[in-house]
Image 1: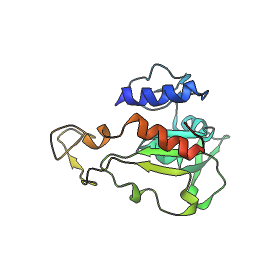
Image 2: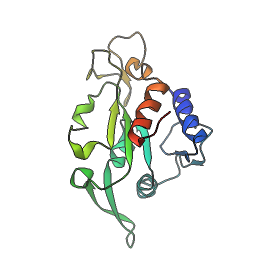
Image 3: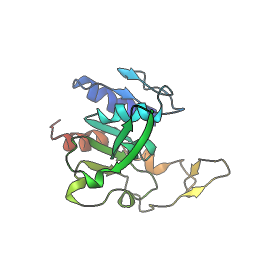
Length: 171
């Protein structure tokens, strides 16, 4: 939920980090230093992400971009190629992905090269339970008690703790 992202963003802003918002058709945190929601092309989003020290986001296209090294041909303004970070271990960017029903192990492989990429997921014992609803791009929890219960159980404290661990910082 937005208010939880806001708590995490405020925590890092108070520590001197610059907060940047990216995404499409999402509400604003209202505390970001830079708001690029609905204002960037994929090429511009790649440039912004490549300059990040820490990326925190949900399992999404932007999260997958954060885990890749992107090469943009400026002459033509087209994406020249994407090379997965699996082939490069030198990047400093830390990536923390919040997973709902998708199993993090399908995206994040347990190898030393992946130490900069971490997934966080609530332990509900019901992973990979996607049940598609009538509405496109809408996922309903099979429990039907709370929409996206798995995301609701991820607390700001869990995210902050894991992000600090990734950055090698203490609270």
